[in-house]
Length: 459
Image 1 (cartoon, rainbow, N blue to C red):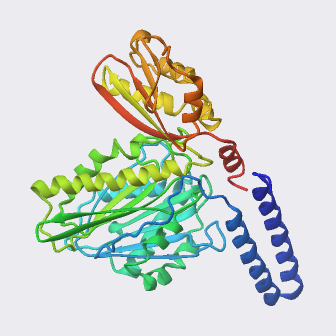
Image 2: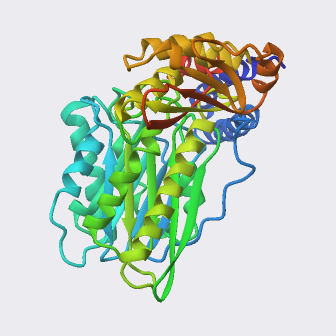
């Protein structure tokens, strides 16, 4: 089968099944409808089997340690997708502290604004918390109807779990501009509440996927005073990925005893070198959310001093792992690229150059074609707006010195560059020779699959 045939065939088959189901239902009622549902299940399974998984995907979902005080559940609610889990719920123990970061888009969703407001609200003593997430519909740019949907969903969860509505955080991801059919979610809240368990985190990771080709998880442990501290995180993200916090949906859980102020400071510091250092397509989402919950259920003492430093390193490591998994799952991606800029006159200039290269369609398509066209990197540096000097510029592909002193390295051989570009993980190192500032950014190539996925996103 040709590379693009699977999607067209699956789409055509899905339409035929829908038409057949309607015909059978009209002719024979519930029995025929059940037959149509069964056929639909087969088609969905076939489509899932045909859908290519990113070649950069990890071999399997990692084993994530259970976080005492955090329970998970997921169900099929039919928000947009059929025959797959699309809503997940997390219940968090009384005393849990929450921190977060969000998109700064001026058209951010009602869920984002609601979460931001709740994080700024004084927490009732001993209150528990919850997180509910749906995929398939972002509930963004839906006006007051969207706000009503957020209130309905969070209120239903609050009632079912016995937690204040001010402590129920929600996220929605998917199509923009369509009202969220929230009744489908609220109807499933009792089922979600009944199914909550500590060991369903992988199922939760699957439920929040949209165009993702694999669920994303990462974990770490830290030796605290008197016990071990665990950290587990899940994320979704594949397209509409650009730095403006958080570039995806991310939920991280830890059993650490830590103050909300300390946790928020750590999260805010870790955002820059992780989620704000990745880009797939330079488009910032309306729904980007990062929530970190600390249940305080570890046997270890409160996170302070040297343990606090170790915990922050581990937390940032989990965030970086999840961020890079998002790039690895970039829509249509076949290569992971680190753009490392050193020798910049300022941190701002280092970032400008790094993102100019990482977001360049010319650079990204050259990577997709395995073309060592280093001239496109030169052009991206020049257009960045950062201070640069042609005669001080150095460019490397991995360890290969390509250009320096304003000219191609006389010893550089095109064959070496071409061979290097065949790898799945690439490093473009640009030294500006002007100062000591540096920045690394991760991106992926731009292939025809990206166009296919996004041209057909709402079909």
